[in-house]
Image 1 (cartoon, rainbow, N blue to C red):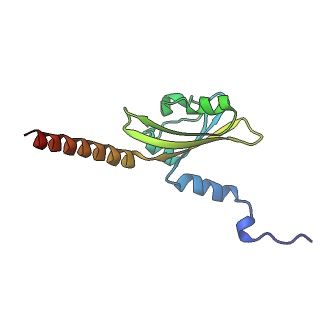
Image 2: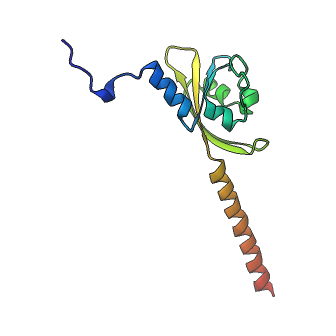
Image 3: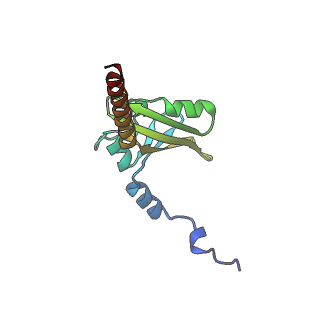
Length: 139
């Protein structure tokens, strides 16, 4: 008789995997080899402002406004990227990777918009401070 697996080594059930995908704060998108959307979780829909649109079967590029999946597929493996979509006002980091033995790629998207906005405000404040300092020195 084979020994029982410890609870942490047991494979996730489909129910558990679905719950994780539905509740993670990170966007998850699965596309096939043609770049067609096969799955999009709620966080992805919120991040990319897709709402309740039926994304399944549609090309991913218009929603992502990025060619990141094409670049990952062309490289034949994983891709890490950081991108900004000005018209949506979002910045994200994404990790893309192929799903073994399937014609699918998974993208996990992390919204870093607030962090990038804070960084830009800091840069602006710093530039203003430098400008004011130079004005005082010149006087």
